[in-house]
Amino acid sequence: MLLTAQLVLACGGGEPKPPPPIDLTPPTTRATPAGGDFTTAVVVTLACDDGGGSGCAATYYTLDGSTPGTGSTQYREPFTLGSTTTVRFYSVDAAGNAEAPGTATFALVGAADTEPPSTVANPASGAFSSPRSVALTCDDGEGSGCAGTHYTLDGSVPTQASPRYTAPLSIAMSTTLRFFSVDRVGNVEAVRQARYVVDTEAPQVAATPRGARSPGRAR
Image 1 (tube, rainbow, N blue to C red):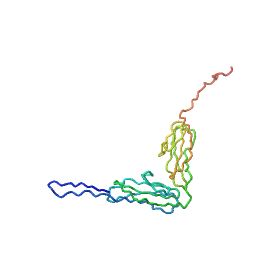
Image 2: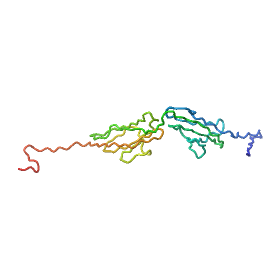
Image 3: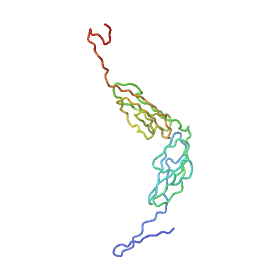
């Protein structure tokens, strides 16, 4: 490797200004937790440290035990493991130094979470004489936990790109609500449906004067 550095002379013929240090040291990456046996799903964080070097540029990882590369998944946020998994990871700094891949094995000693969550609407389907506030509640039992609930109000099939439920929904007109939830390890619930009929119009009653014959009544 050929290293070049430019000397900068201070004004007035002073001593040359030394060039900035060249970063030849790769960063280090730590997994938290560092692996081990777990009875429930575990959230894993990868943290890169480049010391006083050029700074961490990216961290890559795999979940199948294979060697990670720049084409592997780039770490951006903590991820959840719901089954026994070998995580391999490494980081590269801004100067292009890459560390050797690290490994952390997470063993789920209990049953893996393969069951989707269950979501209920309250109130359920029905006919109402005034607008209603509808709450969606997700329950994942002993699984990894609910990650999100998605819904539509036009009767179309919701997807994970549909609106995410964050607060009770105001139903002011007849509406078909469709919804589902997904848990933290990716198990997806089948789409559920609730139909709300909202009729805010009072019934019309026609009064007939006493002694008057109703239309069509025989004499």
